Amino acid sequence: MKKDIVSFTLDGQTIIAKLGQTIMQACDDAGIHIPRLCDVEGLRHQGSCRVCTVKVNGRTTSACTQPAEDGQIVESETEEIINYRRDLVRMLFHEGNHLCPICEASGNCELQAMAYRLGITQPTKFPYLQPVRSLDASHPDIALDTNRCIRCGRCIRASQDIDGKGLFGYVGRGIHRNVGVNGDNLAATNASLDDVAFSPEICPVGCIIRKGVGFKTPIGEREFDVPAPQEKAAPLPPLSGARKKRIATTSLAGCFGCHMSLLDIDERVIDLMRHVEFDRSPLNDLKTFTQHCDIGLIEGGCCNEENVHVLREFRKNCDILVAVGQCAIMGGLPVMRNAIMHSDDPLKECFEEAYISSPYIENERQRIPNDPALPLILDSVYSCVDVVKIDYQIPGCPPSGDMLWQALSALISGKPEDLPKELIKYD
Ligand code: SF4
Ligand code: SF4
Ligand code: SF4
Image (cartoon, rainbow, N blue to C red; front, side, top):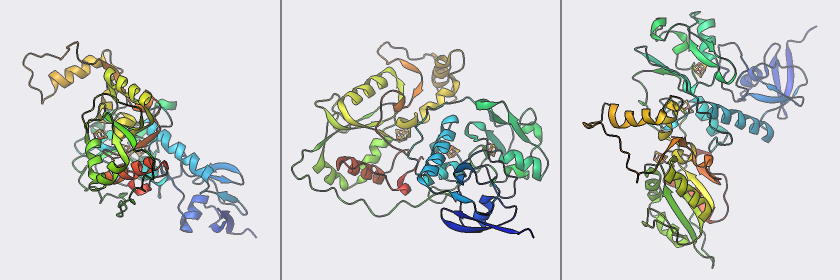
């Protein structure tokens, strides 16, 4: 007689599954969560994001599509599998345009939460592709920003299989594959907020946006916000004869917010000054290096030739170079201008928008600054890692004072180590 239950082991633990269940479903029933992005309850399995990758009898497969069978040996939370998942999630960041500090989904985003869960400080292992993708704001209630799309297909499956409206479909192939609207634009589809594709749980990221509700939930109360640890890091150990570490800091194309955040370490600055001396830095107004430094802290990305020159100087004069904040790590807000780099004359378009056409500009003589003393603007905005080798990255916009303190403490003590996951924030 055919059995209606099977059993397998997951990381050594026995799991009982109903016949016909996938490994993921059986683990869900057993209260064990396998990470996922494209799979969601109520929709058919697609197995495209591969974040639920597990090893079954030594072979990698997706847990959301693999049927549970008797005697399987399944590995999930091993270092090898976690590293696969990290790389998959990193690639999702790199192939889209993810600017968490200005994203309506930040704090409620499954991709961002997955990156935190996997302990990804920043996804800079691969080059940023910075694609130019469509933004459809034609509908009065909903906008579709495909720059953040991870091609999970949840909106497509929901719209095809649940209410049968088929609002969305895939367009393009390979790396250019994207989600498109079945119609001229969202407004032309007569879509309404009641359509299942617009249910808040469908899009895991910030592509399908309900107009007028973004940013309404305060930071700290959003779905995936995790309270930062309350205890402050231990004071730095005594110097015991060692010389003070020399630190240099600079702001390239940054807003100085990261420097301001450094001041949020409050009274710990006294401890810090016992262990370090600042060389070239806006904090002491020293504009050139007076000696070689142990640590260089870089705020901001590279928008112009002077930024590149300064960054190279820091690389030459500092043993350890740290990219501090989103702008240094991936270009930050200025990187938004890269979206027009494929036009015929992108710089002209940028300047005209910034100095002439913007509704907030009063420029009667329609002049665009072009003094030869001004540094030449680069064709697009580059992250620091695009220009020089960067040793460490401290994410956030800006990183909190506590995070900067923990990172500096580790660097000064010569023991760079993993920061507590709860301190890592991309926004
Ligand atoms: S919050 Fe999510 S969708 Fe928005 S930019 Fe960050 S990762 Fe992308
Ligand atoms: S729009 Fe959202 S739900 Fe649809 S495929 Fe892209 S990420 Fe997934
Ligand atoms: S990361 Fe944020 S705070 Fe830091 S320089 Fe950039 S915009 Fe300013």
